[in-house]
Image 1 (cartoon, rainbow, N blue to C red):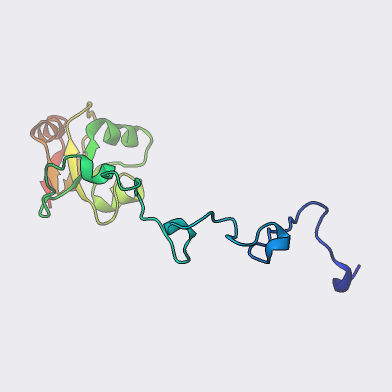
Image 2: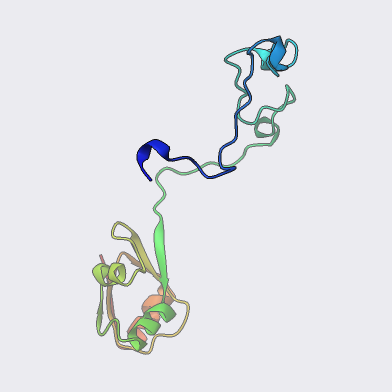
Length: 149
């Protein structure tokens, strides 16, 4: 076998319709586009969401609310998640942003907030951006320290 006699597998290639190649082809004249109208013209493209002139859904549905551009989004981490990391031996006594990023609990640019869901038995020194009141109380009750960045 050599390059000059390579052929595609049987049935893998279909012949395309030869449109607008004369009346004898059966696809001449209007070239399968029908008669007149916008869709028969060259350059026609329909807008996304176009509903044939009916008021589009995007314009029918009421708009409300707004997005505050100054909002700060925090990545929440619960106490039970920290306790499970202690039990797995992934953290020992100090928890900071680098350790949380290394364990996949937060991104390197995230603001982190410790939430009070679950129970913390280990004594941990935690340094993050924010704590809920219940989380701070639970950390200090376990003998740990909650330091705000």
